[in-house]
Length: 379
Image (tube, rainbow, N blue to C red; front, side, top):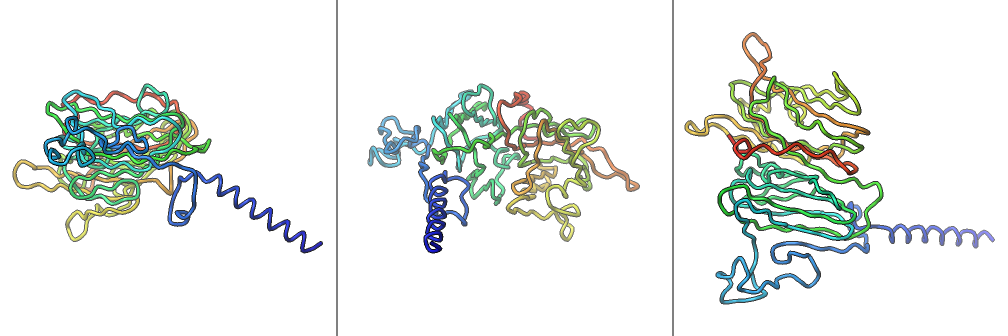
């Protein structure tokens, strides 16, 4: 009887393990579970397979390819359509996916002015985008020049290879567009890697919003103030252009959550502190760039003695292991604060750009309109 009971318990245990294995959806992968099998389907969209359908890659006819001249001696099946060209004022659909699944990786390398190329993401049936950001800023390159960035969520590799690893689940549909607001053609090589699989009921939608102020009026820069609903905040990218001398990052970041009014729930102690640095990022009298899994001062543009006369900085902070959770609303501000004589704070008038990243249940509050083209331009 005892042996029979032990056998029964083992069978129940093995059954539970098998059931859990059958339920694994192929997402949330890491070194601890990469060996697990699932029924998830891997797909990828690029200019060589615009639909992502199985067995449909590399089928562009020679006469229709973006590289038809280069491939003229080889023909169909070779490198016939490796990039797309987007004309001025044209919006191109990079990817349109039907079904349930999640984007797991995006790679691209766009030409032209990165501030004049606008990325938009739409989840399910929404008419307003959940992501609306110039392509350079989305990947932490707001100043329009390459800087190495090596983090868990975003990497930028030589020469201008943009990679994003933010997981982006969708339940019915996903659409990604790219708009060229420049006066010249631009081209983009890209790949959207995604999985068709079952999405958990508690999976929220990915959002990203761009903002810019030059100057930040009254010394208060608002990163976001229109988030309504339940979700969690996962990341900040900021580009600071400084108009005065001296240390510029004394400003505190403030998270107003769930009805906070005059005073926030989370109050930082300084700009470099929030971006996981300290003491002005100063090492031996020089700004020290760094790029880590969760935070970095990855870009420092130093004056060249001629036309690039002002210092420019790019920083990121990912709340991957410490998301800022909110139940009803979220507003985030940061002070634009430096120093003046006598050890007194200076309310600065800096050129500030930001992208904020969060997950929330849809529908979301529509974003404020992007600045006009002349205001978008890097200064």
